[in-house]
Length: 403
Length: 168
Image (cartoon, rainbow over all chains, first blue to last red; front, side, top):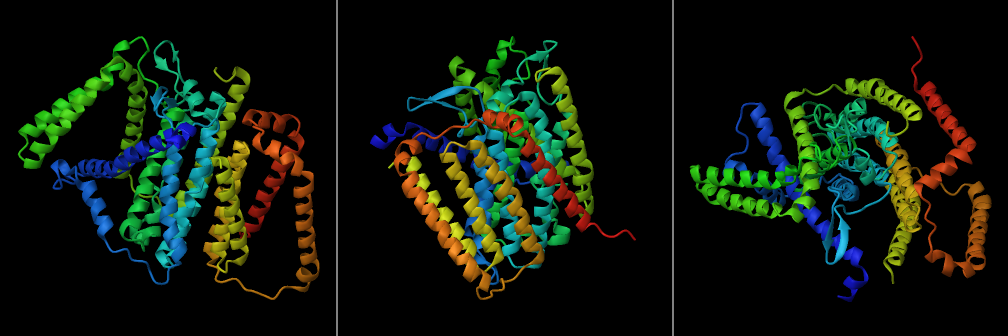
């Protein structure tokens, strides 16, 4: 107890990390379910359906399966690096999330006032880029250490791709930094408050529209997703850099990919989409109760759907989940709680929209050819993001930052 | 023992471990990985000194960009075990005395010059904000800054000239 009273910030941080880790891990698991469901809809299929109602327990089943599979290490692999690579990939992907704030409110934990972020830094954006730039090692070392041809090709491709697109990714963000004048996410979101003509929100996506497009393209390439998923192009490279990985090590690469997707979407929300700011004018006070109304309606729908469902598990599970949603919704209707929940509600909503966009891309676009990918990155995306930066600098010089 | 002290000891040990590994590792990729460990541990030491910006740039530039290219090239060439030769004569007669001299100089400075100040100075890290740093960089040191940029540009152009195929 003495340690707790001596290092209150440390203890509060550990509590926040534990909560964030639980939420993110659950989100990662259900992101796979969400992706399979949406892609299935796009392709006129049902997607996962049999494990639990609407396949809701599929992520759990997948996790158990990964844990109980035999963990094969190729005898010719470089053992230390082979084991290190998946840990590096997942650890770095999760670390970046520590810098993402999800709301403006301060809450009280164990008598300590604390913000809704694990690590508040005034150079958070640079730190985030620094940590995520190390993520390349996970992929590159996995490819090299497997000591096999396809993984090596996949590792080489992905390092070249990630290095190339990182340049455009960083440059596309500088425009926002010039307009906001800070590296701190709180200041960047703060600079996007207010409205043009009393109704258009002053989000950076409007002055920085080309920056946003460049960022989104480069971000999809950075996370190795379709249409830029050349490192694991199965028609050419079997499974790319993780061909030789099995069991939970394979799952770790998978989780790292989804964690990176979440990070990149969070960053896009903070930089371009106004972070936790509401799209509606502040004068509409009823929006404070939007989270509560949404949760209560969702809960009622779950109870109704569960009772009318033919499956026994659905009859049991959905009403319980619905009641839980009703309880949380009721809690959110209390004024004090509603004020705190407001920021995270909009933030998570926007991140969710971007994640849907990611899955939508996957369901509809074909894959690039390798030389197309490289020439697109260097000959189109880089010049466009550079031009965007130059024009933004000139405008800022003549009109001032908040013009 | 405070948390900062514990972090300092751990990261200092990691730095030395990485530096020794860099020299002793037989596999080039392991050497590169050791060097990355040194850089990341050094960045944590910078953070402990209150130099946030330098720490972030250290990771971003050295570990995240330069070493990625090193690893990439090693992978691309698929270099095997490095070729070992006996110590060259130059290393034995010039390198060894220089190393010993350097160590002695560092030891002297550490024990005589800073012994008195260490107790007071180490506990109060100078926090250099990013704003102060950029103000200095773009006013007082603008000439070296721009010259470095031009140097990098020349290096990029040089690499392009060397890598370009001869026109048919």
